[in-house]
Image 1 (tube, rainbow, N blue to C red):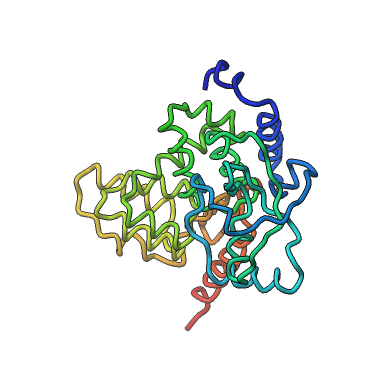
Image 2 (image 1 turned 45 degrees about the vertical axis):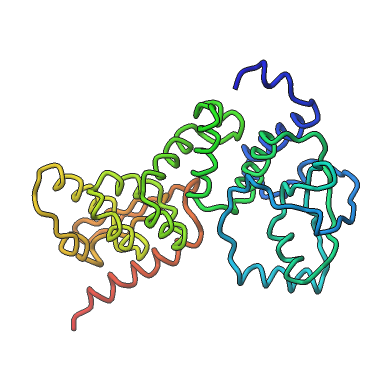
Length: 298
C-alpha cells in the first residue's frame, strides 16, 4: 500500500489500526473495544445492525453460542460490540458471537460502541486483526483473509506491516489454500493447525491428500512419514500409505512446536513454548503411555 493512500485516511481510523497492530504484536487477548478506548456505549436496535461482510470467521460453533447466550441472559452483556455507521444502518466490526447470542435470546437491543470514519478497507483490517488478537479463527479462515487482502493488490510485506503478523506465516497460510474445497473444509472442521505438516502434505500427490489429512487429524502421521511419501512420489515408486503410517506407537505424532526423537529405547522431547499449544499435552501423555503399554510383556 502506498504512502499516498495511507495519507488520505482519517487520522482517527489510523489511530485505531495502530493500537490494534500493537496489541496483535504483543499477542494480547483483549477485545477490540477494550483496545480502542472508552467511547460512549449506546443501546442500538439489533435490526439496524448488519454483519461485517469482511468477517474472516465463517464457522461458529452452535453449542458455544448457546452457552454464550445463556451467560448473557444470566449476567448481561459484559463487553459491548463495536460498529461503524453507514447512513441509518450499522456494520458490525467486532463481537459477532455476542451479536448472534443476542439474536438467540430474542433481544431487541445490544450495547454498542460506534467507531466513526471507518472505510471498507479499514473495516476488513479491523475485523481481521481483532480476530487474530483473540485467536478466534481457524488457520484456513486466517488464510482466506490474507488472500483477500493480497487480491486487492497488497503484497505479503504490506499485509505483514498492517497486521503485525510475520511474512513467513502469512505466505505459508496462503499456500494452504491450494488444497481443494473438500480438504479445506476437513481441515477446518477437524481443527487441524499443524501448518508445517499441512505444507508438506501439499507436496504429496493430490490423490493422497484426503487420506493423509485423516491420519493427521488422528495424530497418526509424522513429519518423517510425510517426507517418506514425498520421496517415494518423486521416485515413481508405488505408495502404500497404510504401510508407511501404521508403525504406531514408535512413529511419533506430529504436534506443532514439538520435536520428538526415539532411538535405542530413548525418547527425546523438545518443546518450543512459542508454538506449543497446551491442549497437545494430553496427546504427548497418551503417546508415552502407549509406548509403555506396548513395551509390557503379554
